[in-house]
Length: 387
Length: 223
Ligand SMILES: Nc1ncnc2c1ncn2[C@@H]1O[C@H](COP(=O)(O)OP(=O)(O)OP(=O)(O)O)[C@@H](O)[C@H]1O
Ligand SMILES: [Mg+2]
Image 1 (cartoon, rainbow over the protein chains, first blue to last red):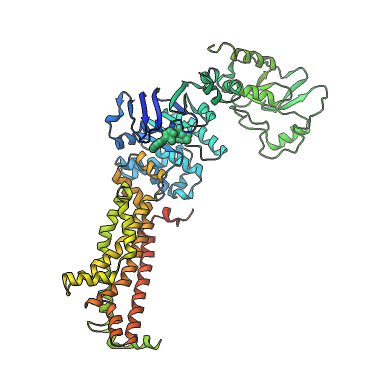
Image 2: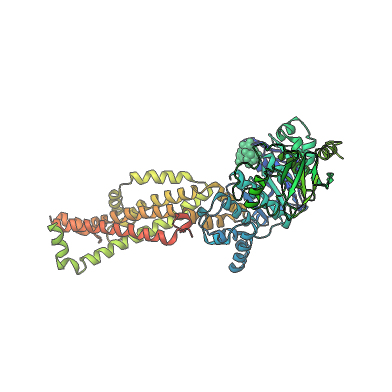
């Protein structure tokens, strides 16, 4: 647990970067500091590893005032990842990752073995170990930065906009990787970003800060989205708050029809009971935006499913060609055990039938989620906020 | 051209205490000693100022002094002060000549290291001295070596002044040649000085390859 007690930072030129900050960062969870540029996120973060010392107030790490700890010793126990990665250009990747173990006096062999293990953990090909940082892409460098921060297995990890310098696709995969790692490692993570979507995706708790270094609101993402404390927070959360909130509502409560169709539409399955598409009953013509265009090998059969999973094995090209030839319409699937209400809604919107296809973990048909079922679930989700 | 053959072809020029090998060795000796002293002064100073950011004015003064320094005048002054017969009159001006390029480049090299890198180094828990020696110096090494190379070449070229105060080195060929109108000797001496400077240049290129990390010089091969 990291505790900020009345922490204020005033710089030499009079700038108040952080103003009387009181908050708690719980152990084993991700706490995100988010806010507009210059609101004091970086300053707050850097006070935790004493890169900056507060002007007033104190910061406790598991109850101990960090001012009593020698900064280098403190920092060796706290992983630190920055936007620029900050890899040592003169050292090979493996030695970059092993920086802190070396500092802690591990023998070289053990430190390198640990570094290799971490490279794998963060999804880096260990063939890159003998390269130098300039030979890596930005995304790879950022992964090395994360591996380096984790090398000595510190309980706390500080991350300052670690993913904002890479393109959106790489950013998404780095975020997913972090969530996966965090599920395994359960570190106490403080993550700084100015991107509210990133904050909501990654944070167990999100602290919204406003310029002047004041805390505007601290809450878990669903609460934040449902009940912004004031106009500033509401404005900062942006549009689509309602839809985005649905990401936190499990789809499990949805009613499922076990029949293989609804009036006017039926679901076509393959031999493994995996959905192939919707068929219009009564000879409705295909709409031209379905499978009429020649399918490319490797195309996912259905559109992207937000926060959802695709069937493990999408129908092969041949099956899809058959589906297209049979005049089938697009569909979306939702796994009620894993996905959110938002994913279910999205799956329904993908299909001209207006219904989502419920599947099990293997992608096999379990039933149909109708518009009425979605309506009922939505009504429940948007009902009393604390219900 | 003929003068060169006259000079290098004359067997007498290759032996004895006034021969080419001895003169080259004397020249190298002055230069190396002067360079070592200059390094001893300028490198720690440059590292310190670059690392702490304090005393940058020293670097500015040194850089400007370098341009204004009358080497020969300094030699004469020191001879007047300490008398002939020692190497001091030569070493002091050579050291004074070599310090500024080493100091300026060392300082610039350390200062020029990316702030994010410095930040990451401290953030990992390196102490000040470790940050300097394990991160800043290896990254600044190309510039530090550049400063050394400039200094070395200037020193080698300027060490000819030793001859003015009766000391050895390749300056002897040049100055004695001028005094006795023995132009082959003058030209030959000058060529030897130039050749030595070239050797220095090559030596540093080699050194650079050996000590600068491929990750910094960008020479590493992708695999
Ligand atoms: N060393 C410093 N000296 C003076 N003022 C500073 C210093 N560092 C930061 N500030 C000021 O403190 C305020 C907060 O800075 P900080 O870097 O914490 O913002 P931030 O929230 O991280 O912003 P960004 O999203 O742009 O990174 C800013 O107004 C900034 O100009
Ligand atoms: Mg910042």
